[in-house]
Image (cartoon, rainbow, N blue to C red; front, side):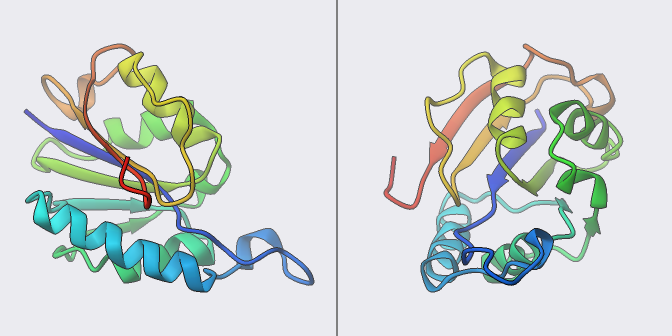
Length: 157
């Protein structure tokens, strides 16, 4: 059964003087992203494919996660913050990939988790991640078919 890991980027600095897409991680964000990577490795969750927004904060989150994969696709469409776009990108992941990690932005990642599972947590703070078991092939993924297997935040929820 394929697994989808949906991760909201780690905490970024405020946008004073920077375009939103150029905001880097804050100190807390760097620590949280590193801890999220450690949690994923502890759970044995190694992505075969990473779909990552092109923003600076998502790229830095990915760098600090340090997943053991060489297959990374930087997708500018993730930055557009539309859950339907996220669904399309995951459908195109390729069925040879058993575990896919998507790193994006709120509110779309939170809505995407809710669309897939009908069971999203009430909040989805920075560096929150949801692990969703998906029956069948990536190309068949649709709203309501996923099962929320795990939910983790920097505060350990």
